[in-house]
Length: 380
Ligand SMILES: Cc1cc2nc3c(=O)[nH]c(=O)nc-3n(C[C@H](O)[C@H](O)[C@H](O)COP(=O)(O)OP(=O)(O)OC[C@H]3O[C@@H](n4cnc5c(N)ncnc54)[C@H](O)[C@@H]3O)c2cc1C
Image (tube, rainbow, N blue to C red; front, side, top):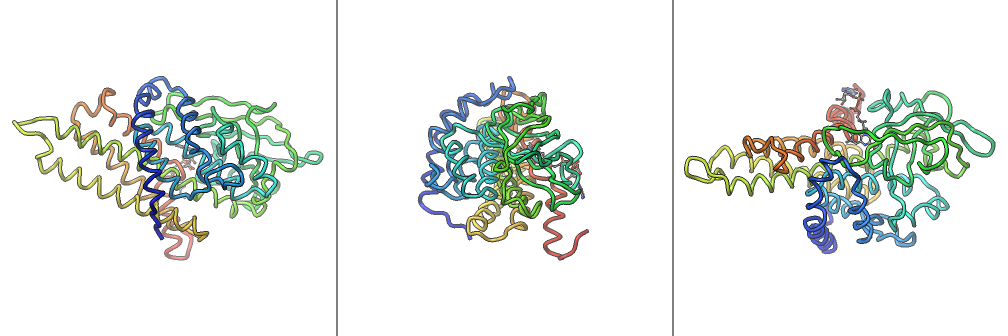
């Protein structure tokens, strides 16, 4: 199911060069200052990458999720924060409109998302409802011909730069079928964003909390494709998990490359440390784990691109990516010895960024629960 074609290779090479030239130089400063990568996202938009998965009739490139995985990985290789914002736009914000909006909604929102005028994000999590969507408290009540939305969302990645956010809120009773997706412009009256600062990693990813204090919406801001509730919304959660995997594998690849380079230069006992068996074993294990997880990721993306149901494959890819990137960045820190703990070297940032990505898209435990459920056919 992995269809790796010539255009995938071309796009990867192009973005890889761009990432080394334009993204890498500012990554450390972005992390240090907890800034927003507005310039980088603008340049990514100029390369028409924000419309990568948007159909051509709406101004996008009409490419597949596999292409999006490759692009996000290459950006994340040098800067997890910028890669994470791009992943949110492609795998959450865009996916929500593509999968849940009707034709009129697609016509209304996608062209500005493709051109880069609007960065799109996704707001599901709440303080008391993260892994457990049934605890979502945000409500969208009927008001005149439309809705009024109240609630408080958290952990919205890229939220400080967003021009559009798909908010998950309940439309009525307290069950999963009553959850719905609503598109809002975070700049409207009643919507207030608070930046989330002093995070361990992804410090330039523009996280925010969002207070929704009676935000008025017209009826067409409700995405009709979410009418079935949670079972429809999970289509977006699946792609979000792929985006999270692509970011963490990109960050891990960056850390492996730095550790490899460092170990070829650093000398101990008269030899470069890449001659020592223990160091070589760490390189080999990290590369093998990351390559294996990439194949799972590309397979899951290919299945979704082919219109197949891929919940199990998505969770396997997300789980493998978390485990591989965690191991690869931890080993990279170890390979750099004392320097691994210094901000002078990028593996320290990679290690922190990957920690941030461990819960993103649902923690390891949740992915294991989902994989095991699909294998046994029963809930735990
Ligand atoms: C980097 C990052 C980016 C994010 N981006 C977004 C975003 O753009 N939009 C958005 O809405 N949210 C976002 N989130 C929130 C994210 O979706 C939640 O953090 C995620 O759902 C996991 O919840 P949790 O583990 O943080 O919390 P909890 O649900 O409180 O879980 C705490 C721990 O318990 C475990 N656990 C939970 N349930 C079970 C169970 N049944 N059995 C065993 N263990 C269990 C979890 O795996 C975890 O280890 C982001 C989070 C991070 C860290």
